[in-house]
Image 1: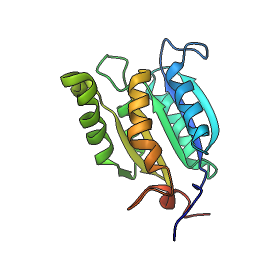
Image 2 (image 1 turned 135 degrees about the vertical axis):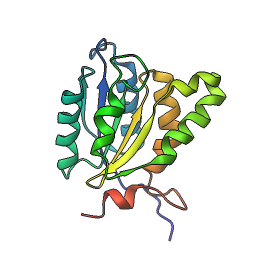
Image 3 (image 1 turned 180 degrees about the vertical axis):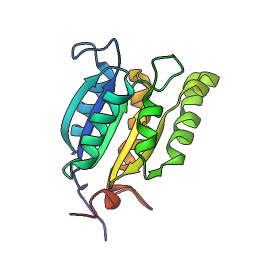
Length: 170
């Protein structure tokens, strides 16, 4: 059976940054615009500071909300002392998506060389919600969305995608 139209998902975007605001958040805007263009709904877009408790509060809220199917974060994945996204979000996972970070770095290597080892991009599942965490640069968000995430959140992708896991309770 061929599915002609993708199943739309409700996706939340979280920008994690001590310096970005709504006007300067090019990465968050890129993700929000592109997920809508792909046929999904933007549940909400939020900017918060690099703070473990604040990050966890927002993500816990979203993973407990059955109307949120996926979360994409941008920022806080590097090695600066304030970069705490992995430390904040990884403990919330029921299942990590090991291949996401590995594939992101493999693709990113073709674009930025060995500097990709400083990327701590990662993903996981929590309460039937898919979470992808990307670096803060717009180029990293373009790589993550265009070359991995868009395809995995598209119900037409074969042989497999995440959509059935996200909509299994509907």
